Length: 275
Image (cartoon, rainbow, N blue to C red):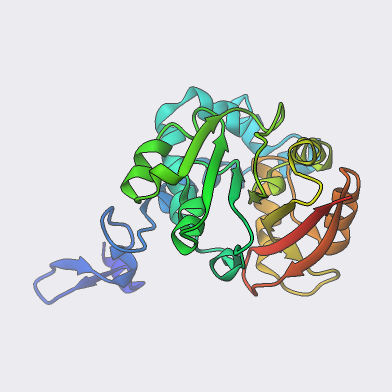
């Protein structure tokens, strides 16, 4: 406790009583902008995997698979507590990677489909900012297990359908705009291309695909996405991509990259249109 107090995590008074600081208050469940589940997730599965990067470098197998004997999403499907922690981790971190959707113009859109949206943190933000919109939230059964309760608590349940399924099999039709938020970086090009191909089957010819991901700079320019690139490598076998790499990946699934909206943070916004 003294060591943590010396780092500003706690306070320590003359009677050796310890108290909270703005840093440790973020670990409380009920504090605004809580980071409790972010800390738990990073301190458990991520921390262990981060300790085995050489295995990934030498063999090509992700460190997570090496440690747990299965892929990350397979592990979550079999472990309820880990899945609930991951869902809360994604919810609490949803607004901390740059969110250009907050000011995005959806005035000519009626239905938005959040593909792989977990329990719905991002689509809730979009629906609250755009009262005319309705939504479809789509993810694996363990991803949307708590979605209805969360959507109801956030006051948008009546405007958002919840559908369980795998984006490797199919994606619900009926949307004007499809959203992939921090999904494609989980996967190598082959699997990311399959997700995009299934999106193309669902997206109307005049529809739009929005991809919320890092667009890392070429060369040795600094970028928070380049650190995240390492996490994707040892956790999932995925990667962050440059604009050139995104353009190439999209072209392979019959999309064209229309523009990139930069945020200066870890997540940017890519607009892609069907071709």
